[in-house]
Length: 168
Figure 1 (cartoon, helix red, strand yellow):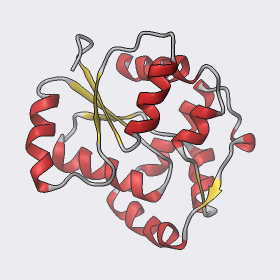
Figure 2: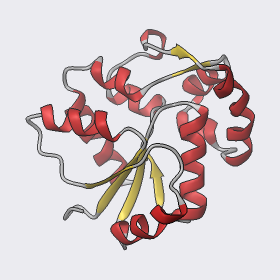
Figure 3: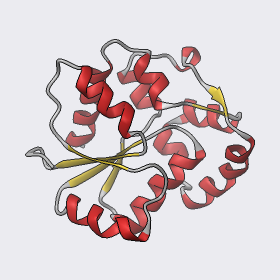
Protein backbone atom coordinates (compact mmCIF):
# COMPACT_ATOMS: atom_id res chain seq x y z
CA UNK A 1 0.00 0.00 0.00
CA UNK A 2 1.06 3.59 -0.34
CA UNK A 3 0.44 7.06 0.95
CA UNK A 4 -1.48 7.98 -2.22
CA UNK A 5 -4.47 6.07 -0.95
CA UNK A 6 -4.70 4.08 -4.21
CA UNK A 7 -4.34 0.38 -4.92
CA UNK A 8 -4.16 -0.91 -8.49
CA UNK A 9 -5.69 -4.32 -9.07
CA UNK A 10 -4.21 -5.78 -12.25
CA UNK A 11 -4.37 -8.97 -14.27
CA UNK A 12 -0.91 -8.07 -15.63
CA UNK A 13 1.33 -7.77 -12.54
CA UNK A 14 4.51 -8.86 -14.32
CA UNK A 15 4.39 -6.24 -17.08
CA UNK A 16 3.22 -3.46 -14.75
CA UNK A 17 6.02 -4.25 -12.30
CA UNK A 18 8.61 -4.44 -15.09
CA UNK A 19 7.55 -1.11 -16.58
CA UNK A 20 7.63 0.61 -13.21
CA UNK A 21 10.98 -0.96 -12.32
CA UNK A 22 12.53 0.15 -15.62
CA UNK A 23 11.28 3.66 -15.10
CA UNK A 24 13.10 6.59 -13.65
CA UNK A 25 9.70 7.89 -12.57
CA UNK A 26 8.63 7.41 -8.96
CA UNK A 27 5.24 5.71 -8.94
CA UNK A 28 3.66 5.24 -5.53
CA UNK A 29 0.61 3.06 -5.11
CA UNK A 30 -0.22 -0.37 -3.80
CA UNK A 31 -0.71 -3.19 -6.28
CA UNK A 32 -2.60 -6.47 -6.24
CA UNK A 33 -1.63 -8.72 -9.13
CA UNK A 34 -4.06 -11.50 -9.86
CA UNK A 35 -4.68 -13.24 -13.17
CA UNK A 36 -8.34 -14.07 -13.64
CA UNK A 37 -11.05 -13.95 -11.04
CA UNK A 38 -9.96 -14.06 -7.39
CA UNK A 39 -10.57 -17.34 -5.61
CA UNK A 40 -12.72 -17.46 -2.48
CA UNK A 41 -9.54 -17.54 -0.40
CA UNK A 42 -8.16 -14.42 -2.09
CA UNK A 43 -11.17 -12.21 -1.49
CA UNK A 44 -10.55 -11.60 2.22
CA UNK A 45 -6.89 -10.64 1.91
CA UNK A 46 -7.52 -8.43 -1.14
CA UNK A 47 -10.29 -6.58 0.69
CA UNK A 48 -8.06 -6.22 3.77
CA UNK A 49 -5.13 -4.98 1.67
CA UNK A 50 -7.26 -2.37 -0.08
CA UNK A 51 -8.99 -1.42 3.15
CA UNK A 52 -10.35 2.11 2.90
CA UNK A 53 -8.08 3.03 -0.06
CA UNK A 54 -9.39 3.83 -3.51
CA UNK A 55 -8.93 1.06 -6.08
CA UNK A 56 -8.38 1.05 -9.84
CA UNK A 57 -8.36 -1.89 -12.27
CA UNK A 58 -5.70 -2.20 -14.97
CA UNK A 59 -5.95 -4.93 -17.57
CA UNK A 60 -6.26 -5.87 -21.22
CA UNK A 61 -9.04 -4.79 -23.54
CA UNK A 62 -10.56 -8.23 -24.00
CA UNK A 63 -13.73 -10.03 -22.86
CA UNK A 64 -11.93 -11.86 -20.03
CA UNK A 65 -10.48 -8.76 -18.36
CA UNK A 66 -13.72 -6.82 -18.81
CA UNK A 67 -15.50 -9.68 -17.05
CA UNK A 68 -12.89 -9.64 -14.26
CA UNK A 69 -13.33 -5.87 -13.82
CA UNK A 70 -17.10 -6.20 -13.72
CA UNK A 71 -16.89 -8.96 -11.13
CA UNK A 72 -14.50 -6.94 -8.96
CA UNK A 73 -16.74 -3.88 -9.23
CA UNK A 74 -19.84 -5.85 -8.31
CA UNK A 75 -18.62 -8.36 -5.72
CA UNK A 76 -15.24 -7.44 -4.30
CA UNK A 77 -15.49 -3.66 -4.06
CA UNK A 78 -19.03 -2.56 -4.84
CA UNK A 79 -18.87 0.94 -6.29
CA UNK A 80 -15.24 1.45 -5.23
CA UNK A 81 -13.12 0.47 -8.23
CA UNK A 82 -12.28 2.71 -11.17
CA UNK A 83 -11.50 1.38 -14.64
CA UNK A 84 -7.94 2.19 -15.71
CA UNK A 85 -7.73 -0.62 -18.28
CA UNK A 86 -6.97 -0.34 -21.93
CA UNK A 87 -9.33 1.83 -23.89
CA UNK A 88 -9.53 5.01 -25.92
CA UNK A 89 -8.45 7.20 -22.98
CA UNK A 90 -5.31 5.22 -22.15
CA UNK A 91 -4.34 5.03 -25.84
CA UNK A 92 -4.59 8.83 -26.03
CA UNK A 93 -2.42 9.04 -22.91
CA UNK A 94 0.12 6.73 -24.56
CA UNK A 95 -0.11 8.74 -27.82
CA UNK A 96 -1.04 5.57 -29.71
CA UNK A 97 -3.66 6.14 -32.43
CA UNK A 98 -6.22 3.32 -32.43
CA UNK A 99 -5.56 2.66 -36.13
CA UNK A 100 -1.87 1.98 -35.41
CA UNK A 101 -2.24 -0.14 -32.30
CA UNK A 102 -0.85 -3.66 -32.32
CA UNK A 103 -4.20 -5.42 -31.90
CA UNK A 104 -4.45 -9.17 -32.18
CA UNK A 105 -7.36 -11.47 -32.98
CA UNK A 106 -9.42 -12.73 -30.08
CA UNK A 107 -9.27 -16.48 -29.65
CA UNK A 108 -12.45 -18.38 -30.45
CA UNK A 109 -13.17 -18.76 -26.71
CA UNK A 110 -12.69 -15.00 -26.20
CA UNK A 111 -15.03 -14.27 -29.10
CA UNK A 112 -17.60 -16.59 -27.52
CA UNK A 113 -17.06 -14.87 -24.16
CA UNK A 114 -17.89 -11.43 -25.57
CA UNK A 115 -21.60 -12.02 -25.03
CA UNK A 116 -20.86 -12.95 -21.38
CA UNK A 117 -18.81 -9.78 -20.94
CA UNK A 118 -21.67 -7.83 -22.48
CA UNK A 119 -24.11 -9.36 -19.97
CA UNK A 120 -21.99 -8.82 -16.85
CA UNK A 121 -20.44 -5.55 -17.99
CA UNK A 122 -23.12 -3.84 -20.11
CA UNK A 123 -21.26 -0.52 -19.84
CA UNK A 124 -18.06 -1.91 -21.39
CA UNK A 125 -18.50 0.37 -24.43
CA UNK A 126 -18.39 3.42 -22.17
CA UNK A 127 -15.44 2.00 -20.23
CA UNK A 128 -13.23 1.31 -23.26
CA UNK A 129 -14.59 4.06 -25.50
CA UNK A 130 -16.20 3.94 -28.94
CA UNK A 131 -13.07 3.14 -30.96
CA UNK A 132 -11.89 0.30 -28.76
CA UNK A 133 -15.39 -1.13 -28.42
CA UNK A 134 -15.66 -1.28 -32.22
CA UNK A 135 -12.28 -3.02 -32.33
CA UNK A 136 -13.40 -5.57 -29.73
CA UNK A 137 -16.71 -6.18 -31.47
CA UNK A 138 -14.80 -6.82 -34.71
CA UNK A 139 -13.04 -9.73 -33.00
CA UNK A 140 -9.76 -8.01 -32.07
CA UNK A 141 -8.26 -7.19 -28.68
CA UNK A 142 -5.49 -5.11 -27.17
CA UNK A 143 -2.92 -6.52 -24.77
CA UNK A 144 -1.46 -4.23 -22.12
CA UNK A 145 2.08 -5.46 -22.63
CA UNK A 146 1.99 -4.65 -26.35
CA UNK A 147 0.81 -1.11 -25.65
CA UNK A 148 3.35 -0.42 -22.92
CA UNK A 149 6.27 -1.99 -24.78
CA UNK A 150 5.38 0.16 -27.78
CA UNK A 151 6.22 3.26 -25.75
CA UNK A 152 9.62 4.13 -24.34
CA UNK A 153 7.89 6.37 -21.84
CA UNK A 154 5.40 3.70 -20.81
CA UNK A 155 5.89 4.14 -17.07
CA UNK A 156 5.46 7.90 -17.28
CA UNK A 157 2.34 7.47 -19.41
CA UNK A 158 0.98 4.82 -17.06
CA UNK A 159 1.63 7.10 -14.11
CA UNK A 160 -0.07 10.00 -15.90
CA UNK A 161 -3.11 7.87 -16.73
CA UNK A 162 -3.26 6.64 -13.15
CA UNK A 163 -3.07 10.17 -11.77
CA UNK A 164 -5.79 11.30 -14.19
CA UNK A 165 -8.03 8.51 -12.86
CA UNK A 166 -7.21 9.50 -9.27
CA UNK A 167 -8.31 13.07 -9.95
CA UNK A 168 -11.81 12.00 -11.05
